[in-house]
Amino acid sequence: MRKLISLLFMAMTASAVMATDYDVPIIVTVNGVSSEQNATITVNNNDGLYDLTLRNFMLQSDGNSLGVGNVALTGIKPYVDGDATLLIADKQVTITDGDDASVDYWMASILPPVDVLLRGKIEGDELRCYLDIDLAALQQVVQVVIGGGYQMPNPSFEEWHTAPGNYEEPNGWHSFESATGSLVSLAGHHLNKTSDAHSGDASARLYATSIFGIVANGTMTTGRMNAGSMSADNTVNNAYLDMSDTEVDGNGDPFYTPFSWYPDEVAVWVKFKQGRTNNQHPYATISAVITDGTYYQDPEDKTYWNVVAKAKNNKITTTSGRWVRVTAPFTYTSNDVEPKAVLITLSTNADAGQGSNNDELLVDDIEFVYNATVTGLKIKGQKVKGFNTDKTSYEMELNEVITADDIEVTVDGRSAYVAKDVETDGDHFVCTVHALSADMSAMSTYVVNVKSNATDIRSLPTATNHESAVYFTLDGRQATTLVPGNIYICRQSDGTVKKIRL
Image (cartoon, rainbow, N blue to C red; front, side):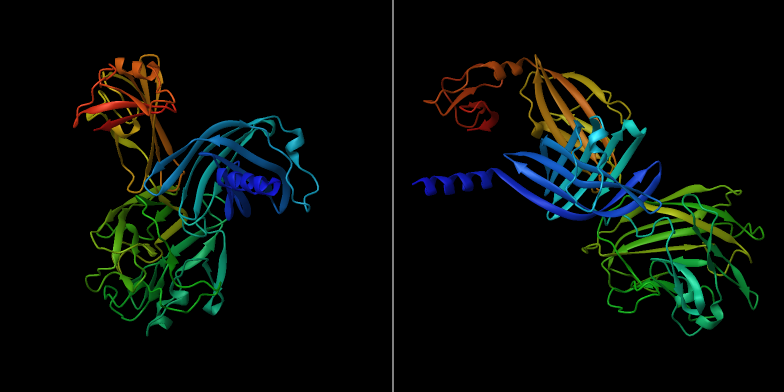
């Protein structure tokens, strides 16, 4: 009998607490300097509330590591949006010693409690989070990005590999040094590494040359270049990707970049100057095309039905020696295809074979941008009066019961998430809306205080053990006779309240 009771207790405990370990890459940024490491994050679902622990957290700098400890956030209320469970918390945390035996010393014992801001999601088997850890004792805020895949590899062009001919290409990028096509030998070289960087120690420099009087633009791509015609504007000269291609570059990477998300725009920092002013063709360019991974080329030689979205900025002007951030918004097609790869191409001129000899484009810090700004807000179908994206707090009056389902939110991010919550405070329903970007990097929050006499329902009698529920009309009166087809507020024996239609 005792053994049976023990087994039942273990079964009940297992159902109440479900723990999952995520062994994922994390990016740690301290004072604007980022480093990547692997880490284990444990997530517990504890009777509906979540606990998240970043285990054995380390700070790394110049090849040195400093043990911080375990960063644990407990009792996180989850929100559901589609298939995603959203985790949002702003807590004070006491960091504890880690359990990695290879670490001689943990800072946890000398750190006071720290403020930690969490915005994250669990979707399928993926965990994606941003943690802002305020290490006031060290006079710095540390940002930890958990989970990868939303950005390009090597976005700051710090890592390079050797291409054919002993030339260098940035990891994940390719130019004519590794191109295909019958005229590769005539294409020349148009890419090198430079220490003139927007951040870090390096950027990529593209430069144009003149071959037999024809300007050859400096171009690089995340796919592969093809040089097949002496006519610069012939589409045989292109950048292309094909995930069925098994060839690899000098770093062992394929000539394509896997990518499966829905960004709102692509942004990059550039320095651009023309070797000689050309008023008819004054612009450099960036283009990005998200595809299903089958063959695609830029410029196109036909209509491609495997395109998910396109972005292009072909108006990059001379920057007068300054680093300038340029962007290009994505336009999504109606093609019924899933994103699997992205082809990004940058060139010293927006027009093939134009510009001038010695045009120069420096490129650094490329990123995909995921928006999360609320553009519209309604409660019970009624617009929140005076709403604008810069104002975060509002008042309105609706003499009805408000639930999270009654809040309608529109967001400018194609794949943004929304968390909605309603609580009562006296005679007000406090409606809180969080909009989170797909990559969890951004969050905007809005609060609407709705005055309503229907909040009285929250203090009306709860059903007893002999009653399954107590019903109230929408104006707060207890209903003694229930009419089919009408809407009622149902207060159940456990104290929960919900709106039902009989």
